[in-house]
Length: 111
Length: 110
Figure (cartoon, rainbow over the protein chains, first blue to last red):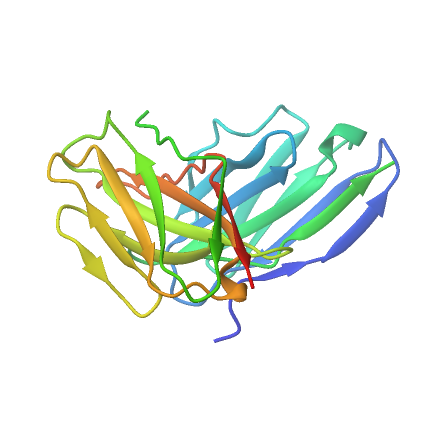
């Protein structure tokens, strides 16, 4: 299996621009997670889905962030408008059962 | 939310055993204890998990205290590739809500 696939791997964007991060979970997995990692705040759970339905979005920082999962094989995390404080590594992960599998992350820099 | 407490950092010598502690005094009876690790510039990866009994797999062993208020991840022979941040996490039995703390940064010296 190819594992969790994220794109883009690296993105540099200007403040105010829209950013869309994409994720393809492992086939057959029923949970999908979005995490954000920074030096200051560590690894934060932003939102997670079960069978494409958002279960808990309490970690989403503010209305500028939104996440969707239109089908079992695709999810997006969108930031609009982006700000420099959104610079972080964003991880997508998926699971079926006890183990969560992480992607390699999308490294976002907002200048 | 049940929380965990881990030392910020630990050091080990290569090929020696490493015992990484985790305190979780507010654990509920149905919380699972999970361990993940994050190698540099990578996403976290699963190491091991357990509920009440000690567990072994090819990567590590997990020793759980009888009262379940603490646990220890054991790497039997540390290698340089084991240098990572190790996270101890409590997962509720009825969902997959997995929230990471600061973890323990393990340094392995040759």
